[in-house]
Image (cartoon, rainbow, N blue to C red):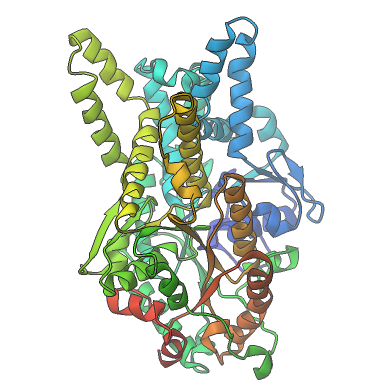
Length: 601
């Protein structure tokens, strides 16, 4: 089918049944996916929009509550939506496994099975189980002509899409043992479903994958990596959407706009060769917030409209710079600083800026990331005295954990016992344990130095905290009656004298709501966020371009909400004309003169 009555979009030309939208966090996957689903529905097609992102905000975009069930979108005929809720999926999965044995097996055995089913490994398997069902359910395929997937950020999406093959292979080899008995107990019966899911993903007549990116060198490099990795597992029907391009006409009106336009064009010129051959669409930057049906219907149009904003409405913000938070953090001399938030809000850059600023003051700092899509070395572009940099690499940590277990637990086993142990350690659940141990090992360093941690996007960070909480409960259960003093990683995260959690957001409706939701989740876990950072603020950069002034005007309500309703401490970091890459630029980003620097660039 060819959609008519709108600006042409290559990725919607003769689309197959399944459309996947993926890319680095914050590039606009959800907005593009929602806009595509609306356009298909407006053209008379029956459409199901599905989010596989643990931090889904599809409901926020449409202004309705969706959740883990198929929900019609009242304002759009023929459009329904579903948010795969990992926690709800995991609970339903646990009920299916435990239900048949409850009352049959002893209570102690049932409790043991429930404990095995409490971790993040189970949560991922359960969400994956629902995902594959959407690709293979005959009733669902009869009800909808198109299923549009708004996927989680890149690293998680790659893992999710690799799982059908990985789990099929795991089942074929007959692997698995008691250590992951709970999570794997429901997999055997799914063998046919997983095989069908693999076939659907690899069939270009049924599946098209749309890489969404921004005109930024790092984002385009990430898109190229995603292209390569997904093509390697059979998803070769790929398209590229470059979102949020500043129109050329704005560049002549404002030094900041001119710098941004020049930066974006340079990124497009140096785009990786892997992406150049893909069918490509370019979506211009809009002045409005991408929430609500009217804005979604305008998003994919190439025409640019803006509402004039008076100069007094676009005046500079009176808000603290990032350095104000650095001053307070540095006074403690050591501690754990964790940056959390939605993908694409700039956690990696801000973590690097905080770390180099602390190191510049002669303080020892360990900068690390738990985000599989983060690239700290590309942000820092060089070493710095007093600064150690690392990354929690799931593959490396899993191998480290395997070797440690084989060298300790396996040392006294005979050949048959060692073979069983090695098979146990090939379980996908081993990675969960290994990453948690690496996380725990690093945060222990905060007792003698600063540890600045750039975390993975919101949903995945919460899964890691879920594992931390499960460990905390188990240690307290075992040690509670001994009278011995102990400290778990969760206890350290809950102690404000040891840990400062900084929530990073953008001055836009959806990121602020997402950060507020994360704050509520953290509070339920006994962790009180210490401060909020509003990043890449146009309002703080004093723009004169009409489009940027409109965006600055729209930011005011969100910044006010952060300052008055959500946060006790706030820093606002302006949008810069040059990318904050390299130590000097990172120091400038954190400095008190960053607003003036933005105008100069």
